[in-house]
Length: 319
Image (cartoon, rainbow, N blue to C red; front, side, top):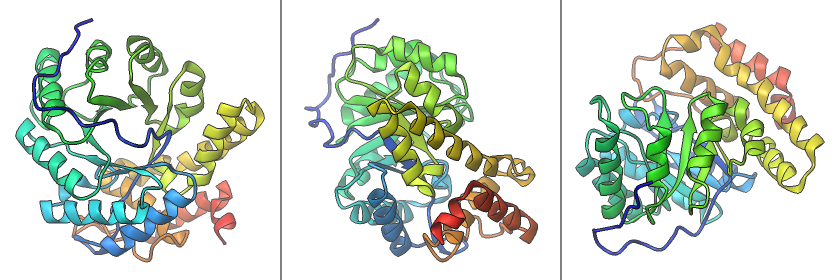
């Protein structure tokens, strides 16, 4: 394994939180295309008070690609104010190149975030050597510790071997791996073993299996609507209460039916709406508008969402 030595300015101290239950947060909107910082502030406070010790803001679930810089900063500031130190605020800084990612990381630090979460650059395919250089340059220029977000939706995949090298950098502290491949998770844990590096599972159905393999926690979009179930799963696993961990896993698995509704295959906006409409139904905020100004959800789609919330028991619990 290549040992990476920082060559940029002095690196920051490690972030104060090492979260194990991270909610991938939606971005509340007042109206289509108009962010709602007040609703984000309340949502961040609620979710962090109910078991999430990390909030991932401006990921794909947060419609990051649709927000301009002023919207991004308003949402990050609101999330940091709502979390109020109870949860680490992790901000997506992905974009089209390292200069943009560094700028977003600097904004995130100014706006109260704890981590900058980086993806491979959008659109352009990179070699693994080029991708390694990209992440290292970002890590050496960022005022925040870096987390790496791997997702199959991206043009360039982050190979396990690349993660093994990145884990040796003192300012790259964690990753979210969303690959739907438990064997890859095992390989990733082996490649980063012994490093100051935390591996978080991004697929809800694989959280418990990943914990059994040695993962350190999860980043879950469903934790934004069912934070207590995720907290119970992690805490029960850590305490050795297998029965409770399996019960919580079953609850979360039932909720993943939200991602099986046929309309979800139409667009990412439908997937995000499934989460926003869930949050609205549960009373977490008042409106479920999208950042896409022309997005429209059918009543049949929303009824299917509500039926799953009822079947899972989450809507009954909320009421």
